[in-house]
Amino acid sequence: MTEEHRHLENGQEKRCSDKTENQEEFDYSKVSDEIDDIVDYLEQLSEEVTKMRVECAVANIELVSAIDNADFEKKMEAVEKLYEKYLQQQKDSKENNSKC
Image 1: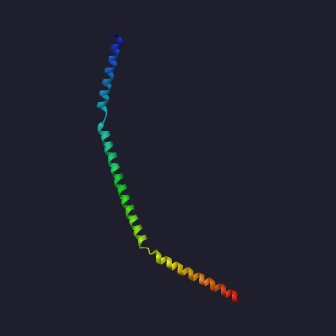
Image 2: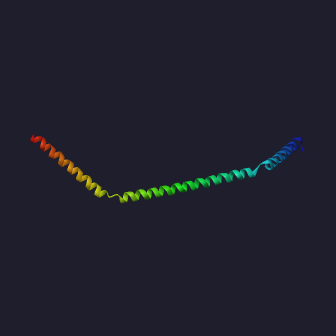
Image 3: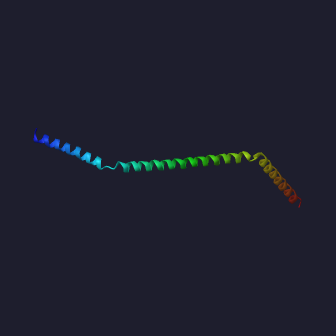
């Protein structure tokens, strides 16, 4: 073996040794705890989104119900009658003013 070859082998052994030491020092439980925290937070957000969707659905149902209960035809008839009455009053007022 040449000197360079031995030097390369020693470097590779050192790198493998460093990786093993780093893996032993790496705290997997910390990563696992962080992942658990993220999962818990996502579940909480999911529950909040579900509650919001339910609230929106209830509000939509209430709105549709209110719209269905409104009797627009009768209200329009009442407005038309009031408008006709107003026009008649205007006409009568003009006739009274022209007589003077």
